[in-house]
Amino acid sequence: MTSVVRAFRSEVLKFRRWSVLAGAGAMLGASTFIAYLTFHQIASGATGHEMTGLIAAFHTPEGLVAVIGQARSLIIAIALILVSANLAAEWTQGTLRNLLVRQPNRLAWLAGKMLAVVLFVLLSMLLTLAASSTLILILAPGQGVQTTAWTSAEGLRVFAEFLVNEALCLIGVSTLGMLIAVLTRSVASAVGIGLAYILVFEGIIAVVAPQVSQWFPGRVFNTIVGAAVPLVGPTPAQGYPAALLTGVLWIVGFVVVSALALPRQDIKA
Amino acid sequence: MNAIEARGLSKRFGKRAAVDGLTMSIPAGSITGFIGPNGAGKTTTLRLLLGLVRPDSGTAFVLGSPLTQPSRYLPRVGALVEAPAFYPSLSGRTNLEVLARLGGYPGSRVDELLETVDLADRARDRVGTYSLGMKQRLGVAIALLPDPELLILDEPANGLDPLGIIEIRGLLRRLREAGKTILLSSHLLGELEQVTDWLVMLHEGKALFCGPARDLLALRVELVIEARDPARRELVTRIANASGYACTQDDDALRISCAAGFAQILNRQAGEAGVTDLAIQVKDASLEQLFLALVKGDVHDLGRPRIP
Image (cartoon, rainbow over all chains, first blue to last red; front, side):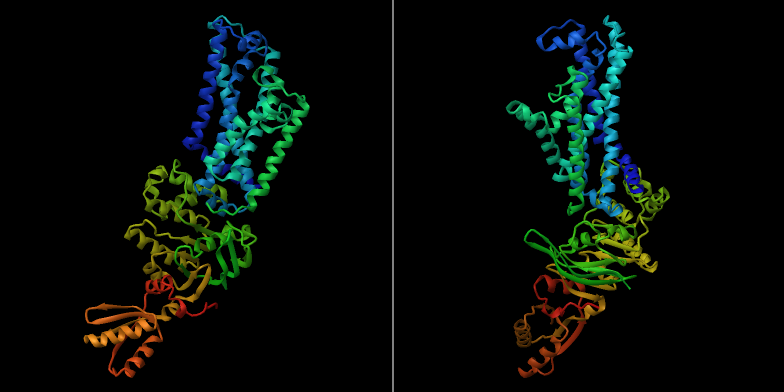
């Protein structure tokens, strides 16, 4: 346990890197901007088929989450890049050999590092959603938008449910990023394969074989959030409990495969 | 007592044997030079000793613990393998702190080491702005972090200016005096010759020699033959070439880097050819000459691996 704590504390120091901070900044900036655009469109009376659901939910307790949740795909993509690039960079930069000489227990090192990285991703997400929410809540009165439903007990419950499921989603995406980084051992490959898998491969499978794709990890992690607030993502066809269980199984699977692969690897970087 | 003991250690990458049945021992408290041409298996051997790659066969013990249990000996080992790797956007101090926290060493050790390698003034600057020599010194600081019993250094003088090289040499000697064992891989053979008391010469993954440096140097000599007369020069050159040695002419003398026993052969064959007063001066060969003999394939006279 001491080894894991040491690895965690060591990893925290690396968050000062501009590349890590830039990732968190991009998540915060772009997501807040998307939330602002969505809010501005609805508040200024924009209409359109794709906006119908959002407009209908705007004045309900789900309204705020529906607006700030429009950037979820971006948050997922940035989280995947952050985790996979951060981990794979240890191979690409050659820093892994320094780390494993100081901490030969590879699993303890991976556990400590991933705890820190996932925590960073979750804090970035929390900060992003807090910033988006605050901005929308500040702008709303000026546009004549009532926020009473958003800040009601029901509104806060929806927000909390959304947060918990979004956190689960990002934990799942992070473990997927970890597995890809451990297997590819290169920043370019890890980021490329990760994004191609989530954005392209699963997208194609969803069109070709939707019954199969609903069990795929990217889809499962995404739908558990949609189950809480349908306006921010697809809902799970298999139902929330089944999707949640599948998501947890995927997470366990990614962790187990990573834990089996890393100790068997020759570190040649 | 040996700090490192390897028996038949092998590692293959695909079809290529990077380390091929390596047997060697390195006494505790020595500075051991680890030499061999590129691709001889030096770096793979160091990675095996550090638990970074797993052997296909063979056994090894580092500081008395088996290679299969690196967590038992690595806390007492410091290493700088290949070009030092850092996080370029972090400061030198933070790079060192990352590893200090990971290994559980106090922050005061970081300050101490930055002073030791003369980087205290630039400690807060980003490593990306460091010169190669400064990065090398930071790498040495990382290796010294655990106050190691065994220090493994791969090309520590790479990129250092002459003053930096002298400082490293002094540091190594101080560490040996403090009872540390140092395994030093370097292509600066002149430097190695000055500091090492033990040598391991690697070729194609095998140890061609493992023993006291003076024993290896005694295996090969440089003959200086006074030969103003062109006929004598031709005779000596012919005898040397027939034995597989090249001659170089230096003013009125011929120089031959060869096995220690060749002086007698030359003298005898020259006598048989009617030259009985050949003036042969025998000088100790340098490590560089030995290394050149190795890479040219003239390794037959280095003798069989000497494993104490």
